[in-house]
Amino acid sequence: MQLTNNEVRQKKYNIGIENENNDFRTTDREKQVVLTLLGIGILSLVIATFFDRNVTQAVMNQNSIFGNIFQNYADQGAQVVTFVSAEVIAWYIWRRLNEHLIKYIMTGGMLLLALNQLLALLQDALSYTFSMLNNIAHGVPMGVANNTAAVQNYPEILRWSLAIISWLILSWLFANWLNKKSDVDLKYLIIVAVVGIAVVFIAQTMIGDMKTLWGRFRPYEMTTVSGQTMSEFTPWYHMNGINGHNSFPSGHTMSGWLFLYLAFFVPRDNISMQRKMVIFGLAMGILTAMSRVRIGAHWLSDVTVSSILVGLLIFAASRLIGAHFVENHDMSL
Image 1 (cartoon, one colour):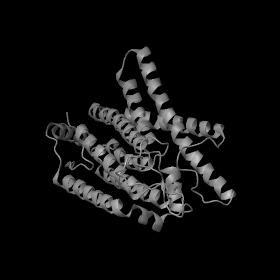
Image 2 (tube, helix red, strand yellow; image 1 turned 30 degrees about the horizontal axis):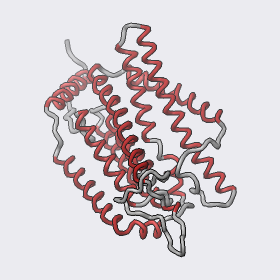
Image 3 (cartoon, one colour; image 1 turned 120 degrees about the vertical axis):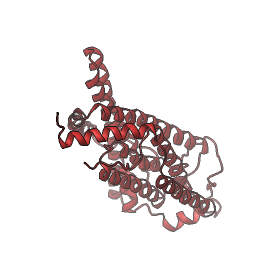
Image 4 (cartoon, helix red, strand yellow; image 1 turned 180 degrees about the vertical axis):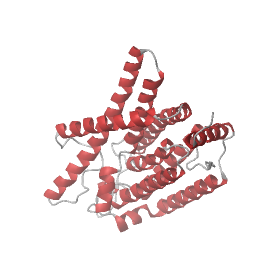
């Protein structure tokens, strides 16, 4: 039987994936990029050790449009990765399980997790947006009081309506997309999804626990006591203990970098899209970090440490998955 061009391409792709997983190793190019980014991070941390206050005083502006856009809409990387992972797991279960009751329960449970992530995503985006609009209406800087915790200042019906409509459309798209995948593709994607949920959990736990333990004041929380500006400032390496302040490390920066993980959901034969998603993820991580310093929500050291920790976590996850950020398969016929 003669194979069609698409079948030949798929067969070569499957063989390439199997060979890649059997002999997976970090490429020289990956080592170069990782070491370069790590070097930049360490240099940034050295600068921040001595000039945290100076950097903030030079660039802080809570009216910054750049800072407000990323504050409002870049804090959802964790929810996006978890949503995509839940959708992949849900439709993988739907396709692979034969026992109807268990299949319906498990698929429904994962789809509810996906809906939950959309609701959480919209809670952040809407609360930040409505806070910003309220600040503008009252003549105060746009970014004031948006940085610590999301508050319900929006119509709840709006959040639920947007979430349910988006959930139905996206779930349908994911179901159709995954239905066209081969067993090899699905095997790869389910690993990416499970590891993705673990990466989000580890990142949130690690950054959240450090925030609590460090108890560092944010730049916009600085006050003047006895004529001394920034009286509550402490260097990044000083742990204040649990005091209700949580500047170090940056949670927004963590979420910004988590967008980089989405590159692993891209089919391994689609090199062009992999490159685009890697560029998007790097841009989200770097720009979110910069925006947090600009808006006065974090010190340079806050975003630098968060970038280093989450970046290394995502790189370690890629080694566990056995996937390069950008593959180099020869897919020619």
